Amino acid sequence: MQRAIGDMSLLQKIDADARGYWKLFSKGIITSKFWNSVLAAERELSREIEALKLEALAIEPLQDPQGIVSEAMQLVVRYGDKIWEKFPEPPENPGGAAMAAAAKAVAAAGGLPRPGAPPGVPPFPPPGPPPPQQGGSTDAYKWRQDTEEVEVSVHVPGDAAKTDIKVHFQPKSLKVLHCGKTLVEGALAAPCCPEGCTWTLSKGALIVTLEKANPKPWPGLFAQAKT
Image (cartoon, rainbow, N blue to C red; front, side, top):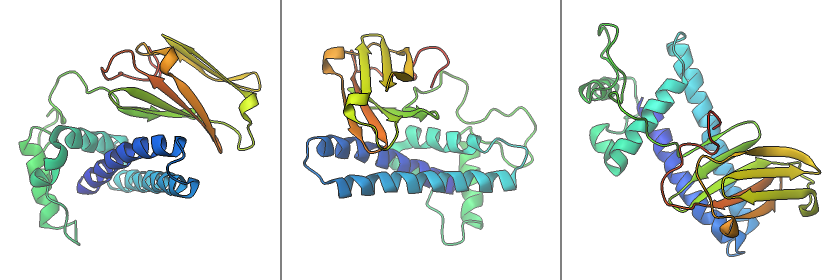
């Protein structure tokens, strides 16, 4: 759990930094080499999270490894900068007493049941509305948000040209095409301001920036069941 918390804490920081760096890169303030280093850090963290899931699956083969990632993110969102006051960082040997103390603290917070607890003990967090998604991904795109904007990174061929791309912004919908083929299309989960929306083509990625009509968090990129 401590490893998962560390990964999710780092993920939040990288996501926040990447949004700022992207704005600087799009204005030519930072170099492509620097921006590529930011993307490399994101890829490295993605590999670490996948390794974490594999380890969790090896320990608990009957449990969904995504569960520990979701629980860790909820803890990070709940406690923010004070997360390590409640769940101290692990020592060099994370399998010792510190891990037991962390598990005890999670259980005391009303979260994961203690080993041997009877079935039916609710997981963290207690019953209630889930927090809004901060982002997500599919095979076609990744997305993330802040209070003002939603950023969508759409996968395109590395040799794609700007003339091949068409992006249609509507207050309640988005459509992205490459050479006449629809890559992304759907009704947005919340309204945007088309006049404030932009897109930029980077190698292998089309970055679409949607200006929110209001600063409320979006529950997802698209309405209904899409992420």
